[in-house]
Length: 103
Image (cartoon, rainbow, N blue to C red; front, side, top):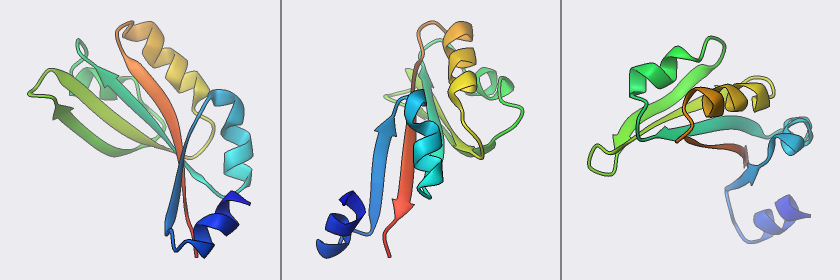
C-alpha cells in the first residue's frame, strides 16, 4: 500500500527508519538497509574500527566538527552491530534506515 501510494504520487524513493525488530521484514520486502551512527566523542576512525563486515556508505564530520557520523550498508541484519556501537560509545545515536526505489 505504501509503495503503491508513493508510485501514484510520483515519489521515486521510500525511506523508512526502523527498529531492529523490523529488519528482516524490510529486507524481505526489497529494502536496502543502512546503519547510521553519530557520536560526539568517537572519531571517524574509531567508529569505523568497530565495523569489520559492512561496506561504508559515508563518513563525515557534521555540526562544525562536533559530531562524527558514519553510515554502513547492511548486507544482513545490523541490530547486533548497532548494539556494539551503543556499548562502545555510550553517547552515540544509532538508527536503522531502509530505502527502496519506486519504479
